[in-house]
Image (tube, rainbow, N blue to C red; front, side, top):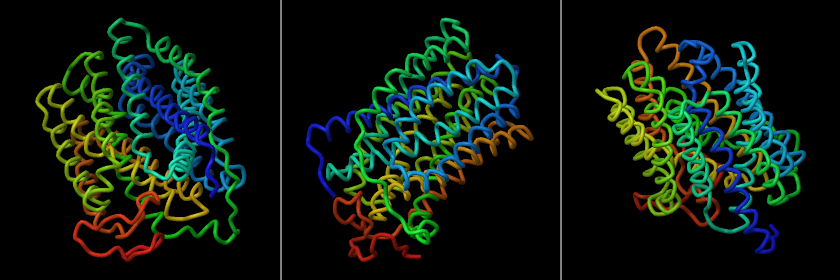
Length: 407
């Protein structure tokens, strides 16, 4: 693999970090102002679940298609198109005057998010491999920082009684020019060549990594989509206080991701994933039994601190385990993983409709524990983003080649 000039690599690093942050900002304000959207159109819990379903189905199907499209045109062009369209689609959500049009706008946001989320991970993996050192947790920390900024901005705007439409549309409009500018910083790479038969036969390890990402993103979707409604409807707090949950969750996520790469290299994937799953279960349990908004927000924070390292780890591994097909592997893991954002919040919504929102959220405890169990099935010896063999905490030699499962 040819190493680009140092200046181009630094520019690409900043560009990928900026892209993660920008997408985080628009997602942050969208998530934090979800109660405002529900109030604007008079949506009940089931209606919100259908909006999330519309977005999730579109995003998941788009990411699955990216596996084949990126092999033909490369990730740079797709990311140059996808990132600006994310801001446009968020603006269309803000402008939606009715529930049917909101569903259509949410689907559009799902399509554009599917392109941008998968391809910014692919571009990040390319920069990481060209630089020769782990960076993926740092890129995802940028997303978290952006989401915190968007969420805190949402808190301020809600406290100032700025209408939902003006808040979200304004942020989308401001984000559009930088989204175009960032496109000129990305690295280029020839489209990955795949034989027709190979396109349907990625190694089993890719799907194992995708399953772990699925569970982690299910849990992340829980906070993004239901934290505000839990605080306003179950714990009877104000919309401004409820909007604090998401940015504080992202502060915890950002903090954890600052140390994620070093922790992975020191302790290995198995131990780190097992600890993350167990601690996440404790965080969700605290949310479920919280007697007040303060305790619930603390539970969301613990959840973010614990689960935050899982998805960056999955994306980094996906980019390393199938040399020559990294973009396709990342797109496949993204499609599997982001289906968790589809299934989780919708499942919680339907359970909440039949019982209570606390009961719906409680179902995520089992999912978090499943991450801990799934960690034991991760193969030994996976390369840590291609930067040397990953240590086995038990001291056993690393003997499983990349791309094979030890099951």
